[in-house]
Length: 336
Image 1: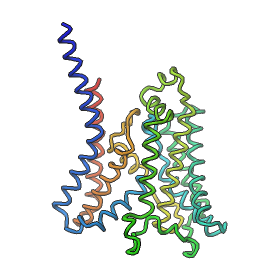
Image 2 (image 1 turned 180 degrees about the horizontal axis):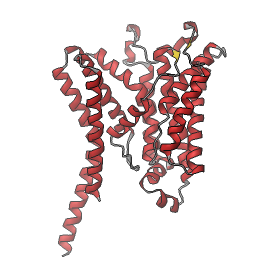
Image 3 (image 1 turned 90 degrees about the vertical axis):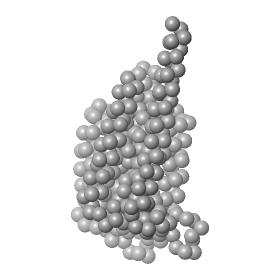
């Protein structure tokens, strides 16, 4: 009797361990499979180092915003205002440069600070009014977009090129004299931020509490976790990362555009979900999120190289998102 019980426990441990490894390595294997497929069927230009650099640059905006979204989804929430915050950040940066006469550092910090303020406001409404995150951030999506249009008077804010200085180099292609950098500064910034966020989730109390809240908020509260404080921090941080994504967007466009990044929040959420994050909360990883963002960019790049229409890319990406969510549900049923 005891022997059979021990055997069952060993099988359960093996099964749960296998599922954990699959959850961790699954997105990486999917990325390798997608890239390998396009490497075989796409033109030779897809496999060049220049195209790899372009993929990294195109991933940066979604990747930076997805770092903050990862924490939100792990905590069991969601933020639909990310795309609007990205647009607001570009407008604030452009306005500070063009009309306030600030330097690029001050303008960049101003854009991120404005974004963080709206993230803080979302967190306050969610924790104080006890309104579900979907409704709060849906409303904030419109509020922030309207604010961006108001600042820009419903027009783009063009910036004198002489005022941009190093801002336009963040996501620009690496010049020949700086080939030792391999990738643009913005991509390296994404890597540094990803390492910092992974360390926060793994080694800090805030990270452990974020997982605890997403797994079971009531249990976390009974265990002494300051749920409201952690949620406020998470949404503020998500807003700040959206502001940094706006800085990267401004570097690409060099204008403040209140209409940019419409629908970007869907790409950001998709990156987290494809990377193994659960919309039920309690699961997710920074590595998985970056891999999820890369998968979508590789698909877009491969389809473009093959001359396929945008609607084909959207169908493929949508199918992958549905598959990722279905696998997540199946995995939860097996664990239960």
